[in-house]
Amino acid sequence: MRVLINAGPWLPVPPDGYGGIENVVATLVPELRRRGVYVVLATVGKSALAVDELVCAFQEPRFGLLQRPYNQVMGAAMAHADRVVRELRGRNDLDLVHDHLEAVGPTVLGAMDGSAPPVLHTLHWDLTKHAELYGAFDGRGRVFVNGVSASQLAMAPLALRAHSLGHVHLATPLAEGADRPDSANRAGGAERAEGDYLVSLGRITPAKGQHIAAKVAHRAGVDLLLAGPVGPYHRPAALAGALATDPDAASNPDVRYWCEQVQPLVDGRRVRWVGGVDAARRDEIVAGAAASLIPLQWEEPGGTAVVESLSLGAPVVGYRRGCLPELVDEASTGFLVDPGDEDALVRRVGAVATLSRMACRRAAAARFSPALMAERYLALYAAVLQRAARNGSLRRRATPRGR
Image (cartoon, rainbow, N blue to C red):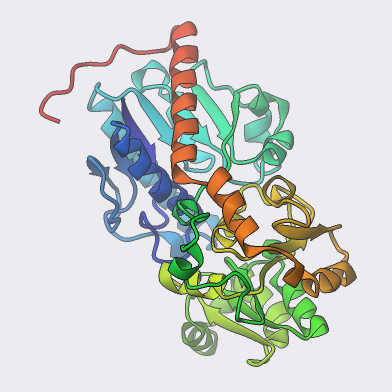
């Protein structure tokens, strides 16, 4: 099988620290290639992931544009999509496109009709967005979608849900062998964490609820590390410098959230912000934490921080919303409380010592391994090809020449 995987123009694959979709692609591709799939990756030129071919419109990532006004960012996604279209039109040896580019991907690829292979578009975001697009979605018999959780797809408009082939939970390389006896040592943790702190991992943004995490830490008397970027700023010094010299910096919604709701609670002692972290530092921080604190303020579709935390042996404490009830086994791998019940979060933080870190790692190894995710996607690829053939939209693939 020969597949073009479209990761978008925002971050390299794998990303340098933060990067949800790009981490998913970086986890999936090696497993697909191990199973004999020929992978053409559409991303930015800076990407270092081993693939069979690389397609790009930009050498450098465009992530810094994402929260700028539409008239400043619109060209980046379209330039990348145009490059993908030109690639698909210039060859006839690909079986399928696996797309990850929000909104632009399925619409542009869908408009190609029979001039492109059939498409599996993975939905990574809130499906209540883009109501006009998703509410009238028409894959024309050749564009199909999958979600990253059942709860996410349950919120999809009927038109979009009619094109769904189901969901595939996210995976992480950290889950591979996480249940082995030496996994705690390899991850830098222990059966009972030596650290007495909590961690909140992810982009600092209102939806993630870091202001709630900070309040809970103060109330529970437990230290908290916030690890993740604020807007385009990955280091505290970079953010401080931008706020001091750039009048537009504070217009970024994540920066505004930081300044107004999170920073007042970051005292450098009980609550600290360590900035964006690379994989090694992430593993060290999470494996040594008593728990990951995830007080979501939205219906989280995928839960990358959850599967990484469990793989590193750190139980999860958070609100019972979005995908979390699908990923966390209550009173075994974490505690979930009703959204908005801050008092219950404080109580559950005080009870994390009753949870087994090995139970977290065993659950991750059984449910969130890259191999399992790859097998599920291969099954979806087969379903896409079968449906496209049944609908008469499966083009005949040419024999590859010199590829």
